[in-house]
Amino acid sequence: MAQLICENLSLGYDGREIVSDLSFQIDEGDYLCIVGENGSGKSTLMKTILGLHEPVRGRIIMDGGTKQTDIGYLPQQTLLQRDFPASVWEIVLSGCQNSSGLNPFYSREQKARARKNIEKMGLNELSKRCYRELSGGQQQRVLLARALCAAGKILLLDEPVSGLDPKVTEEMYRIISDLNKEDGMTIIMISHDVSAAVKYADKILHIGKRIFFGKTADYLGDEISRGFTAPRGSEGA
Image (cartoon, rainbow, N blue to C red):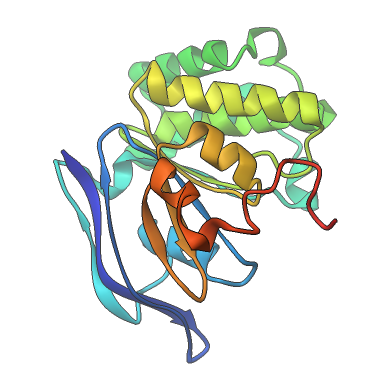
């Protein structure tokens, strides 16, 4: 069942069009990785899906009963955000604001959801700790738990392993894969790590001079993937 459909989408900012006539469909339970050159419009596409940017042309359709409030978002983290002086519990619970409407208080159900996602991310012993005291990997798990509090059906991830060491990176990829395979969460992830993208994702959207959208196996056989699917550790070689 389709959850999100992009029809003839053109994206840009400051009068400059960076993506033209982009069309693709995300089905329930998909794991899509968005890859491509820097500046090709990957983050702009994600912000347009979130309703933070208006498309130049075309449209995005939420289908299958999916609403904007069913989408959880894990953005790239800035240095300032890493020093945020709040507890793990407060940050994770704040993810429920998406479904609070005008109610200034969290419901019993929202608090239960926050506790469930804290447990799912293995953060029970850290729930009272200050966020800025945590390691980079722990902080990313906190932010993922927060995004899950907002994600009823779809989880958007913008470079979720950026700045993490290899061991923590593998752990984060495993967690995301489990959310997709075991929990049925639809994943849309921007990644510069194309080797990981083709390992975990079942669909690839490549944005650049040419656009590819399709199954991962077909992407690997397409000329557009050459130069983007080198083994990890060879980037920049």
